[in-house]
Amino acid sequence: MLVDFFFTLRKYELKVSVRELLDLIGALEKQVVFGDIDKFYQLARIVMIKDESQYDKFDRAFADYFQGISTIDLFDKELPEDWLRKELEKFLTDEEKEQLKALGSLDELLDTLQQRLKEQEKRHQGGNKWVGTGGTSPFGAYGYNPQGVRVGQNENRHKRAAKVWDKRQFSNLSDNELLGSRNMQVALRRLRKFARAGAQDQLDLDQTIKSTANNAGYLDIKMKAQRHNTVKVLMFFDVGGSMDPYIEQVEQLFSAAKTEFKHLEYFYFHNCPYESVWQDNSRRHTDKKDLWELIRTYGRDYKVIFIGDASMGPYEISYPGGSVEHWNEESGEAWLNRLTHHFDNVVWLNPIKQEHWRYTVSIDYIKQLMSDNMFPMTIAGLESAIKALR
Image 1: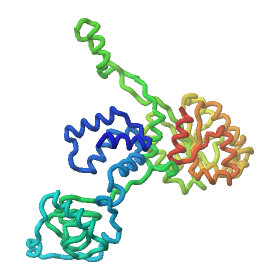
Image 2: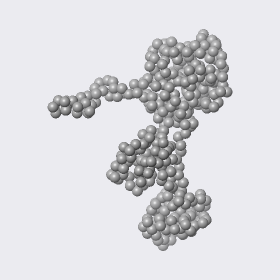
Image 3: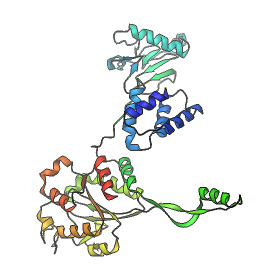
Image 4: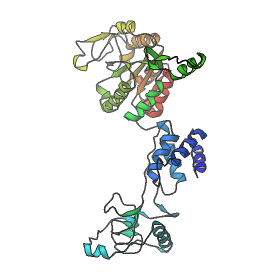
């Protein structure tokens, strides 16, 4: 069975290997899970899928292989939603409940359910035999039976179901969806680069074994330094005005970046960077960072990310004095050119949908200054930006 499941995953272009299949089989042999489709789903996803961005493909493959996952499909018969719609709820006394008899074993329940589905042709409500609602039948929803098969009910009520046949809903991680915190962390993680630095305070087991073997069996312990994320990131956030609708999205990106990168510095600007930027919006007019000083402070190896809608009057980019807030002695274009020439890797993330970029002259202007390294704030866009920064 699992071999066919493995090939179903491959059919959906998931990068699964025989090694992962053997790991899954090994986990099942040790009864890590048993007789529970939801727990098997969680186990299989943990073992087989190493990239969170592939979860949507896994869900569709899982639903394809295990019938009844994406819809309520009982023995190849899909139930109309109308059959399970709750319209009434019957309340039984304790004496009435005692008079109800269970059908027997789970096999007997399923055999009876299969037979009744072959015969049933319409919705039933309040009855004691067919798949329906609000009755005493062993099959259906929102009723009572001492032992039955719960079908299509949202939650537990009497805790007596011998089996639950439910509808699972899976949501795709579309490349065109706006980013959420988890998606951002997954994408930003691809930029991380680890190196060993600092005191040698961790046991290097492989080198210890090798050195001991070369030393005629006498123990020769080798230590190594911890691995740290060595990527250094510099982020510039456009704030105010037309960026206000995107505050929540930008905050999520900022939060994800702070989680992923130890060496992160950030600054704010409005519309276009000029001779200074700032780190505290409440002190933006009194506590500024000179852009020349910033260029001297941060080395070329910093990965630079601008986040802004790039929507402004073209003169704000191309002319001295074009800023809407102060008199800038040099144009925004001049300062952007200095930044892109100093840093080796620079990208611009734009929260505006990419299909709308062509309607704003300044977006195309900034995109050219970024050497076309402008990307939308979607999953695919952020992943493309990360590739450009490597």
